[in-house]
Image 1 (cartoon, rainbow, N blue to C red):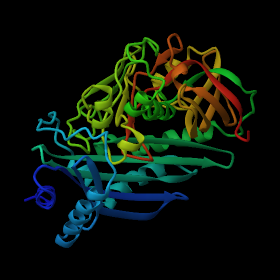
Image 2 (image 1 turned 60 degrees about the vertical axis):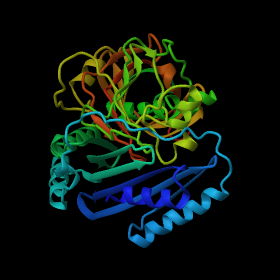
Image 3 (image 1 turned 120 degrees about the horizontal axis):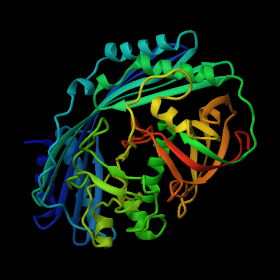
Image 4 (image 1 turned 90 degrees about the vertical axis):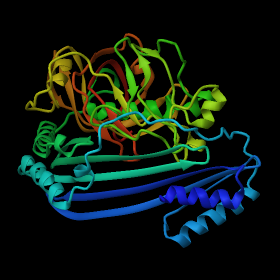
Length: 456
């Protein structure tokens, strides 16, 4: 009998057969190789088992977790959760448990990626550092594998494995830096040498930057910057709880975005594939959030879905009752065009250069940093550019520019008529702050509001 089934059985015996009970068991293996000053200085790995038990009885809900998975630890988990539910306040938002339902079919996970050893990570790091040449390199390479098992008293059971590898690095000169990063569920998709060469080219091309006046500029945002845009849109906008509470910009059925914008949350295809069920055991398939500029959906856990009068989209997590459900595997559909090729200079690929060629005067932006929300209803964000900014004049990248502060509504930047081009290549990126991923092509936008330099 699995841990989930054992805990479920014990909990039902403790509180009675009429209670709603569900159990999540998550085993996470994460291994990390860090490098600084162009050499590896740390190899670490961790394996953590977390068991989460939720009991709902007599209109009350209690949730507890443990990382102690021997018999004594699991018994203690059941006892304190059963005791807590009797003292918990009423839970009027309880939406019941997910019933039995099959999971979407997906390709088997690449276990070699999830279980990669330090030697394999070191090979990628070595290739990255060697490609940077005489510049100073720093960053990390990580691989992770998450095995999740779910069971509840309604008869729903699910088990799945998600794997990921990611590289994130920087090359530095005395006056500049350049970054590159990528993630995939297949380690073989990551090319440390190509990414290192890209970071070095950006660092060398952004030396001795000039200052320019703040204002609205046409921009080409590279995929690394677009990944930030997608995560912000997902967390604040396509969040079911935020939508219900009226703090989201989303208006379902309205053409809120440019006709070129199609945004999908998809665990089934591409290098950023993810889990096929959520923390409530609800299956999760591909969900179109925006189609041809028209906003079609937001994501829900069971609580927000019940309030909205719709079905859960399978986006519950441990904290979604508080912060709301968020998209996990966002993909902005790329535009038509040639496949990317490696090029010299600050641009990341040929699709970026194609976007640059159409700009009379504007800026090429590599990255966003330290972004913070000023107005969730309009989704106005402030932040800084980072890791390379260049002036574009008459379709050519001319001079490096010092970092700028921006204050910009992300949805308004992508509004009808504002998206002038989408890159033909959508690499995958892993969030530094959670389990989310983004597949992000470059964007050419009619305007981006820069409000000052990095110092103010």
